[in-house]
Length: 256
Picture (cartoon, rainbow, N blue to C red):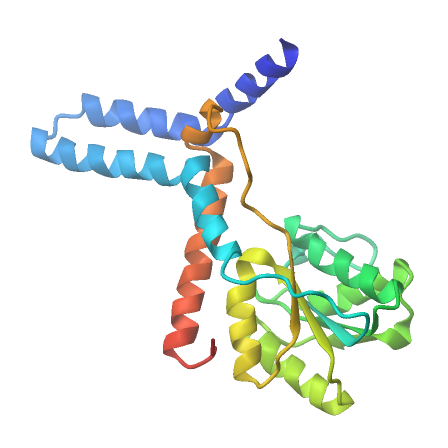
């Protein structure tokens, strides 16, 4: 009883629920004509639908299934971890603020510590519009050292600001060290765009997908069909990624 009640209360506390509720009341009580009200109401219904777990789970699942993890080899020259998992404003050498994409670096560290790869390449600087002056790759390298990866096994690519630059700059590292057997790790929703960029640089790594965002939720769970902040976040990720895939394809920055 307590468990069910706590879940229901959590749902009621979601701010997006109240935003949509207020908008719905405002539309119905407005003095607009029936035609204008109909347009607003249609937009409202669509907005509600696309921020439900049911829709956003399907959307994220689509992205995550565009690529599949490879059957891993016994040994790699290097494992490549793409950044995009830290809040740089609140991260420093003493303390890091991770997002859910922390799976990327954790899996990379695990593979190197298990001696399945000789080197850990961490790629990424600061992808924000307003630079923080910090390199995410450098901070993650310190994190890897604290978790037992020796400094001589870590290679930092500190300058790239987006996925295309991740591939471009990492390709230079690969050429410099003459690495052959490679494993690329990134979030499942991000892998399709990532491997397209690496292939465009004539780098063809094995793939390891982590940080899955889609969920298998019971179809009878009413929360699946209610707008939520989590659904809105997944919708934002989906739109960002689809836009990136299309833009990279049209500008020749990725090849599939």
